[in-house]
Each structure stands twice: as C-alpha cells, then as structure tokens.
Image (cartoon, rainbow, N blue to C red; front, side, top):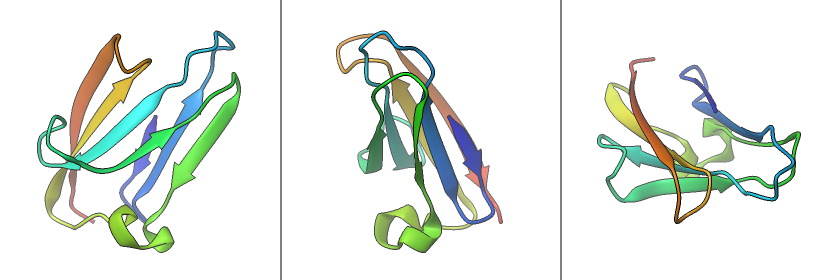
Length: 87
C-alpha cells in the first residue's frame, strides 16, 4: 500500500498469487473509524489506485489524519496505520 498526499493517491497491490484478496479501508482519523472508502485487489501482481481527481470520497480533506487498515482477508490479519494529510 502506498499513499501520496499530493493528489491523495492511494495504491493497493497484491504481490502474492495465493488466492487472498487484500482489502484496504480508508477512514478519517482512527483507522478503525467508519470507512470513507475501501479498495480491494485480487491476483498476484495486480494493483488498484484511487485519486482525489476521482472525486467524492476519494478527495481526502487536508490537515486531517487519514487512517489505513489493511486486511489480507476479512477474517484474518489486519495492519493499521495513520498518516497526517497536510498538503
């Protein structure tokens, strides 16, 4: 998962051909807050990207913490992180 605060570019990739579909939950503030949007990708080597230019929920507010929760499968391991979007 990559985040570029310039243009609010969020990219999620699946690097393993193991049949699992990584899911990224994007929220305002706490990573466990209600989703602003989600990204799901399946298949080793594939990626999906969301940008502010996509409009709507993909345009993330400035000077706000953005929470990211990445799960390999809805019922398994998740990793949480927060980024301050100041540009």
